[in-house]
Image 1 (cartoon, rainbow, N blue to C red):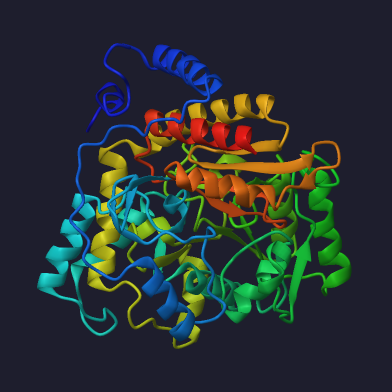
Image 2: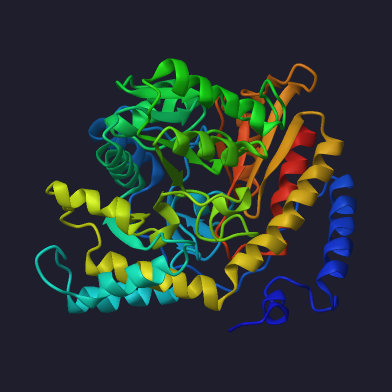
Length: 477
């Protein structure tokens, strides 16, 4: 297993012997560079992508507009044609390299095209790719065992799906079957998927996802930055009690929430909220569902799962995205008691848990452990958050910096007192950052929050580059 000292050599300049000294002196140097209005230089990386010979961006965009769904959108005024990836970097059609400060939450956990995951997929594809519902194959059992070992308590029965949407749909169905109730409570700023049931639970995070579903109730969001009660989680939890008492028959099927809201703008739930809500839900006979599709798999750094930082243990955990490092894979993990309810129905998933995807999933878990990616997420993420807070002191347009590990959000406002969303300015900053070599995400109810969620192999040099580029873009703004 690679030690922390060995891993620091991936991002620590040789002349600095300690992490703390590097962090301090590197940050000082970056401030000087930006004060001089010098365009930051991307961290060196000894790799040359293969030559691209495919269609150009304009041709792809034309076909996309003609043949793909009109609901699809792209980032940037002039979209980027990404043709290759390597660890925390992406390359366009011209071979230009970008720091990927967003793709980690979209699909990639260990890094783009991580050799161990690629090898696992290729080896299994050469051997067998088949449905696992009719015959035995060790790949699905091995991965289920390894995944269960990462979860606390009695969470040890695994159902595999093809996506996070499927996982959350299954979790809500299990809660309803197990309790015999129909009512589900979710949060107003949540995002849980894009099928009918999960879009109903998604609520107001984005008006396009607010599909009305019977039996779904939306609780006040425990947002420490914009919420009515600041960081007082127990006051927000009172709304869930009221929903149970006045919005339902007094009984509920379950409660579903993210530990950190991703699409909603990297919103951390107010302290004390989840323990209070879990108590109320269980008292009403319901099941607690933790959506770990974005915050799971060591991303928050301090813990492997986001819910662990709230000192709660859910009854069902859902996961996807980083679970397969880009391979379509999702999972639902629950207790034997809850899992038994599906024997009363004929439930199966033809490709959920197929050998190729589960081989990739097992490789991901091994890479996270062997390369100490959780610790890296904590060390680099904490440093990155500190630098972003320093940037907040410099630029009035930054209203809030939040998140944990390598799941961070930067909310832009035109007025800090009124918290007026800077949803136009953020597009200008994003485009300038792209032109300087940084690809970053955007989210939040008002579309004014930078979502910084890179692959977990992100380095301190990468963090400096992202902040320096953001600094210069905001200075130009």
